[in-house]
Image (cartoon, rainbow, N blue to C red; front, side, top):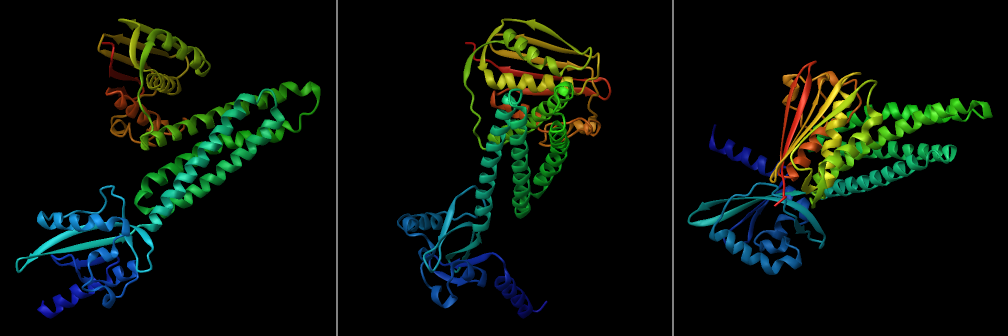
Length: 413
């Protein structure tokens, strides 16, 4: 290819790039700017060529920028986009805008030149802010659902109306969240999985609540209390299911935001397990039963909330994925330094292929798609175990059952 054609391609690439491109010399002066950078900062090339790069730096950062520039030139290195750095630039009209910057350098005739690739991330910041608002709204709705579930037996008709309004807000929030997810293409895969799972999981309990609430209005006679009680129980069960789904979402959100912290306390493990088994007893299917085996000291030192949540999640899974009449075994072994806990069921099991993805968020095994769940349980358990510096292991055979074993270091010393 002739040299002039190469030059034409490079000029076209430079002028039509969607990212802003700046070139500075060793003195830190701008010697080249492309049209995308002109649009980002509001300058024309004639206005900014041969000006110091500090013209694009916010005033409060200018005093330090020159020393940073000298430091870079003394030991230049390339830097890609990202690195979780909050960077800002200054437009011609004084407006401050958030940016991502990638730096490269080259030598020519003994002089170091620096190339800066710049992306305006203002819209991305707006989307992030909108996502936080949606999360706050979701937490608010969750609180309303919990309160409604506790008071439902005393004021059925009144609370059913409130629940209907709360669920309408939840559907509206879900729709708004879907719109925000569509705007952030880079996270499209995990967000689409969330939307698919949430819409599937919410549909059945929402339909049950709305249909039962409608039927309740028809039973006005005293002798129809039994029919009213039947629909009240359906509403309570669906509200509990919704609450479990929302708890999974909130737990994942707190983990992603780094808001889950550990606090070591003294725990009577045997009493804790007995309380959990009693609490989960209503979930047991006909003739299902739980067998407990203890070895070692009953008193351990760890984070009680995380240990309790881990055990509840694993036993709930064993109940959910086992059939009627099946035994579930809880076995614990404690020493001064380690807790070993295993939950064994005789349920549907997990295929070898699905076991590879078992701890991924929103993952549902192929043989569990008709059993309600968010696909977040084991993902959250693994992260809780990680916060306790522990390990989790799963062994399973299809149609034979599953054994989940966790080992957690203790602070008993």
